[in-house]
Length: 72
Image (cartoon, rainbow, N blue to C red; front, side, top):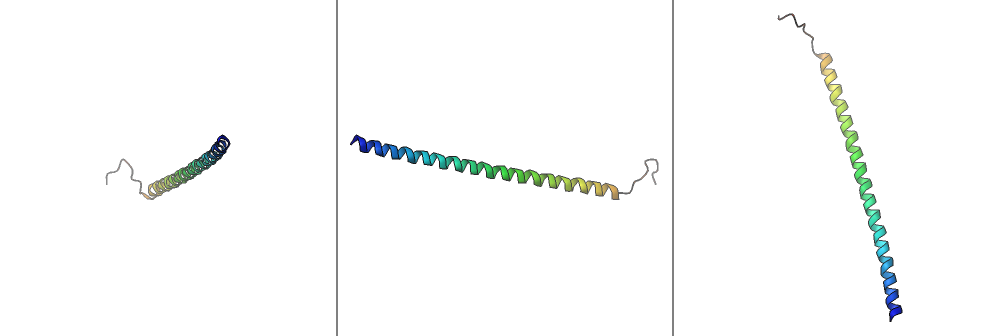
């Protein structure tokens, strides 16, 4: 009986090791996806900021410049 118990324990340890490997893989995949999402969001923020700056520059160049000394 102890030999059978040792065999069952050995199989259980192998299954436990395989589950640990699978769990680590799932965590690394999850973190990789989160990193990709963060990188995309940062890139989107940079693009939106560039459009805002370009819009402000465009508005500033189209506004008529009045001299400060003349009041009409």
